[in-house]
Amino acid sequence: MNWQNLVYALTQVGHNFGAVVVVAAPLYRLITGQPARERGVLWLTLSGWAVQIASGTLFGLVSLYFYRQLPDIHGIAIVALTVKIVCAITAFVLIAVSLRARDLYTGRRATMVWQTLAVLAIVALTAAAFLRWYS
Image (cartoon, rainbow, N blue to C red; front, side, top):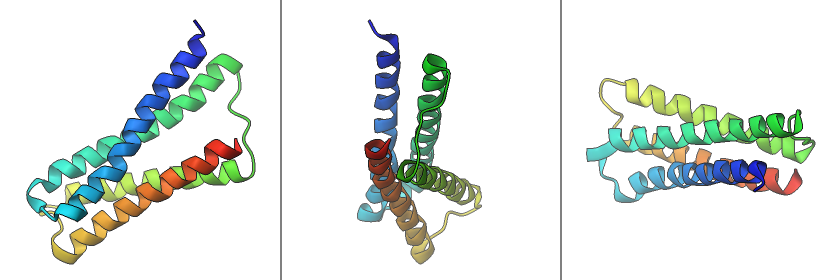
């Protein structure tokens, strides 16, 4: 058995499930418009981004362990990776700020938060396609 491929595949599984959560959770909140479980959906979205960050980091660490170097990416792939990182950090901070608010944002402000989270997720997933193709 090739352990490197197994570790990469398992990391990809986690990364994929994290991607599903970061896109689906904000869209669920926007479509249903039900603020009753808003904190729970925020925590779910935060956990999805945490999985994205952890598994993305693990991709680099697996390469470092098996090849003794980070993946050799350049050009468009570096731009795409940077976009993914910026989206993840921005979403993470936005969710943390929202969760720390005494009362969750309501009305127009809440909608803007969820729309921003959905856009960040979609942009990050789009960048992932470019990262995969150009690396």
